[in-house]
Length: 276
Image (cartoon, rainbow, N blue to C red; front, side):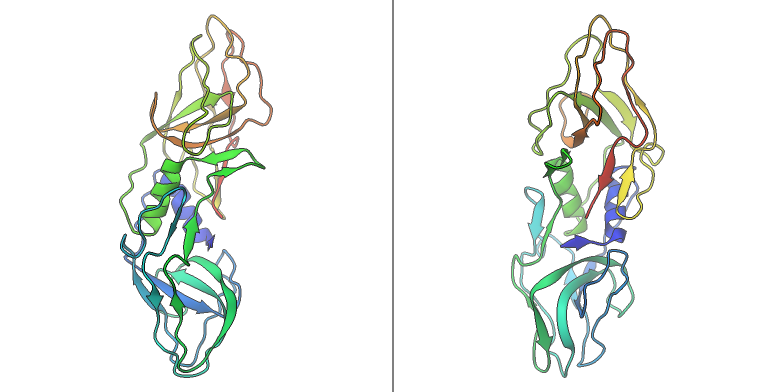
């Protein structure tokens, strides 16, 4: 499954920047005759054979609660029988409107095998075939999206569950890469170390574009006092000044030792967030 830029931007702006987004009450499944692009170009639907999109209520019955960064349709989704030739369907797309070709493309995925639809063929999506996921950890970039955030975003998108992002996020350092579940966080102890409060707004997290966003303001911690913090190699955001849930974390490209008297600073753009 691939998210459109529209969806990726909405979810990123919700999580980082706290820009409200109301997911559609219904989703509409479309047959696609070619691979669309994330910017919604190259969307091509049948124009004959009694074709129409399939209406699916966006609720937790049709899309049960996410777990481990993933969720799938909980009921089979079945459309109307074709009344004539509709062409070879290669992908299915999900939109927020039932009119062809109106509405925003939400996401899309390839069929296991392209299918030729003609009367009286019916498109059926079996339980569990439509799988949406948000990557929890990417070993190649050493970036982690916490279970808490991934599941909240998936449930907001598919199921329309309420999600109020934190008004404040807390930047932290770690010597080790956290796990998606929030383990393996090894923060400095003592010598003036404390997480840094960062207001969750569009100044600190400017609006996403093309499915990604970067931090928009420098994050300065209080100076190390009385000793060194060592050389933390990772930083990220938690939902509380102590404890809390992991939002995300990533590797610092060029870690430096934070000696006594040093004011640690995370520069603009150090964290790039993306949904694919």
